[in-house]
Length: 271
Image 1: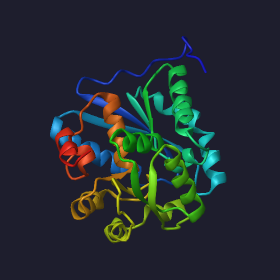
Image 2: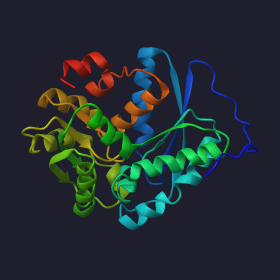
Image 3: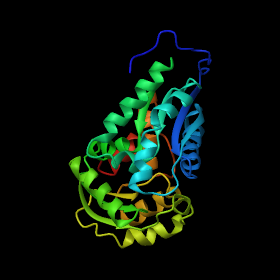
Image 4: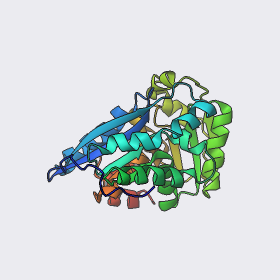
């Protein structure tokens, strides 16, 4: 897809001190539009910079391979719609929909979204949750992880294989086996510390506490990291980390793990 020089550019640029973030989410997602804004609210509290969020939704109810692939086909249309708001960055927030396409699919998905936004006259930085998770793990040198997913066992195996295809060994993978995406959004994050304690994590560099942007995890991230002494990352925190990097904003988020706390705490944690 090539840029259209005649595409409308009616949306005004964001004022100084404000960044607009576009989200592409499954229609049944109820978590990403709460956890991501909360992370950026904490960033704003520390830095004074403000962020607003603007969403487009793609139909998806059941977490099955067929519905996930159908959602992927709608990504370009969603990118066009959300770019009408002249967003500075777009987060494609469905990790498993991307991974279901096969090895390395995050690269193609991000390019499709970037091309659609550019063709609409509003180019934006693009991050996918799938790409953010594997790039963040690799970038911090975390080559051995244990993960928690809400998916059925076959999809969890697929996620595991995708992560391992990026050169990261998955020492253990817990599948909570919840097929309905709305039900995933109702899972209690207070259960996660106990689940994390049961992970086989000997030799692990980090814990991926939620390999899914729909499974709530933010209230548990800092608690699990403090208790188990390992860096804790989720699909949501990795996405926030990469969006901040795309905007050129150093992370300064309190209470969400060392990944987002800032460089000094990452280094203190051995990252």
